[in-house]
Length: 501
Image (cartoon, rainbow, N blue to C red; front, side, top):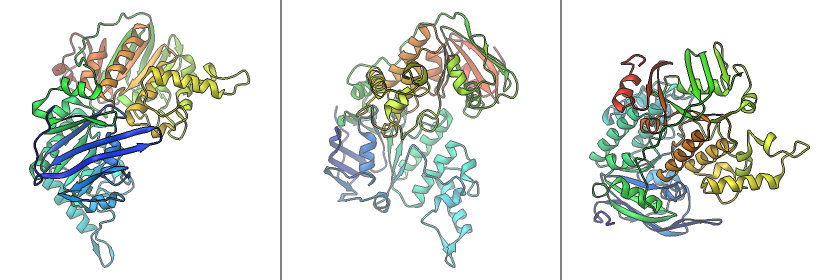
């Protein structure tokens, strides 16, 4: 694979021979990366391939063991992100770093405030943010409190923070992981506009279609090494997937339908929703974010009170049961927020992989957990699900986002609960792991379990579901069989343009 040509004059960021070792892990192995002025450069690789480490080194958050960094042809040494910002770099992290209690304008100008008589000049701050937002097509209300904003608007605030500080190179880590398809399209329109103005953008992403449609160049990492460096126009999604995984990946696998059996989940009048899920089927819920999907799943999982209606699991009324009682009745749950809800970041992998089922399957006669049993259980799941981790004793918070997702999926599938509630099963997960998780969900269904799936990815809902429900303004607005659920039909239903089929 031939790298795109570049000259010293148009190369704005150049990493040469970057090497970084952690205990027991070679995270980056003599990595070279070159980013040109005015381009969108995609950095791809499986979870744990070294992408985040490389960007952390570039942004001054980690110290490299070897190699050089040049910005605009000058060798630099960043001791912290403030040095990188001063050199014209800016980074938007997966977890936004905003103050929820402050306004948009206050967040954008934080630590670079315009002042009047020694105090923050609120009027100047609002004016600067409004002008910057209009210039770059990032509409926000400078006076809005950040804690009240949807996630897509919060991301605009993060980008405005960088532009306000004069960033010419923007690094975005998994920028569409929390966005709807429409928000993702708007984001890439903004990024292309910034590139046309001479900014350079580095996006860390797992999504092949975004790379193919939205980037100019791409660098692929596998196990800490560069395996491909090329122009996006000169490659294919299949070629990139193979460079990431080291094997041919079947991107458009057609999966056989399930064989529905006995009724497992029955929901009547809960938050205005009626639905059923049977053993041996996957029922998918599609809808634009904010139309009630998450609230419904949280109510079914016992995380929100049910004020009206009835929920039955295998004939048992669990409407007002606690989350623990629902688990005991046969419910497993993969939440949308794997970090805050799905795991305890400070606890070990072994402890996280046991949570929720430990009293029944791993407790001793006195009700205590046996460390050896925890480790054995964890090693089995780590190997089976391909979780990249130094040891079962490592804290869950040290895992990459994709590996943390695999941990949650592994834990919830391991005990064969009759019903699985799963939200965004492959968010932030690389192509190889996506295929693996999809295969596991199909196998779970085929073993006779019921699955209720929520995903922002229409292709995922269509590819996995036997039946598809569409939620619009908090209610089920349409129901389709797999054969009837083409993308146009679902899109219209998601926009509220059709009634129940």
